[in-house]
Structures are given as structure tokens and as C-alpha cells.
Image (cartoon, rainbow, N blue to C red; front, top):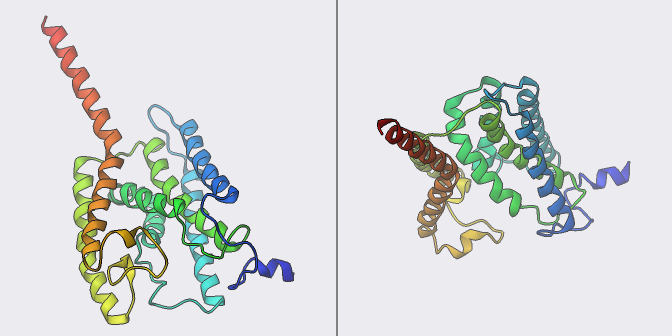
Length: 253
């Protein structure tokens, strides 16, 4: 029992997390394989799979609940850090609703916000001393892996896809969220979305300039990620349009 409690301890005596260690690489491989399996569920036309969809929703919300319970139990839960106002935290709840309700409006946002934010967290997780097999290791990769899988499922199985309007909506929507979050940060001393100051741990933000200029760099990088994620759909649309034009020319001949 004492050994089991060690894996949930706030001060973990085991091996700290190391980027791209064997455990990190295996965790990333599992995420990749799970998403590849979704392509086996693909049909033409796509056929919804409620078991997978509701299972993903359950994993997301139960895992998030366990995360909050662990922080409460270890004396780390507070409103300055645990409200669902960071991108990935908000994405957990929004993804759960999207999966249960099959909301296209939420999909438009989460295809970009969920995948873009979660991929960064999977590659550079904020785990510090919590290496394998601590609870935080499993919780982090399960949460962010499911955030990637949820919009991937909706795309390849349910047949959803983003449009140029989706790109505009997510960019405008995220920027509109900055002001109320900034006001809340100032009121309670929090740092949600990392717009009040840079995080205490080393991050990519350290090379993006001082506050508040790094916020502009964050927005530029975010816009770039959104455009890259939309690129496969833009290329597919271009192929279809080009193919239709060629068929039209041949028929005229």
C-alpha cells in the first residue's frame, strides 16, 4: 500500500521526467497508434461509432476529475491555477460536450485548439519530477492524447471538417477571450493563458521576448499552427477544384 501511495505522492521520490526518454517515446507512440486505429473505423460514407465517441468523453471527464482530486488531496488546488481557463483545460470540458452532443460549432474550435495545444503539451509536458510511473505521468498523456483523438475521431469517422470560416472563427474567438481572462488574472493574481507573465518553468515563451511583446509572438505562432492544421483540407479542396476544372474542359472538347 505504501508503495502504491508513492505513485500519487506530491513529492515523488522516483525518477523525474526526462524529455524523449524511453517512457516519453512510448507514450507518444501509443497516442499515434490510437489515432491510426481510428482510420480502421472509417467508412464511406462515415458511420458514427457511439461507443468510441462516448468512451472518449468518459475518459476525458473522469481523467480531469482525477486531476482535480489529486491536486485537492495534495493541497495544490486553488483558483489561481486550477480553473479551466488554460487552452488544454478548457478543451477537456468543451471536447466532452462536443463528443456527447456531436456539436459542429465546438468541433470548429477544437480541431485547431485541441490538436494544436495538446500536441505541444505532449511533446513538452510540464511534468518536472513526475516521471513514469507516477499518476501525473499517466494523467498528462491520457488527457492530452484524448484531446488530439477527439477531433481526429470527429474528422475521420463522423465526417466533420473545418472550413475557411472555421479558421477565422477560432482566431477571432481566441483573441476575444484574452481581455476577460486578463481582467480575471489581474483580479485574482492568476496567470491563465500565460498572458500576465511568463511561466516559472522554462518554456518556448522564454525566447519570444519580454512581456507584453511575447503575447504578440504567441498569437503569431498560434495563427501559424491553425493554418498548418487547415492545410490538408485546403489542399484537398484545391485538388477537387482542379480536377473538376479539368473534367469540365474535357467535356467541352
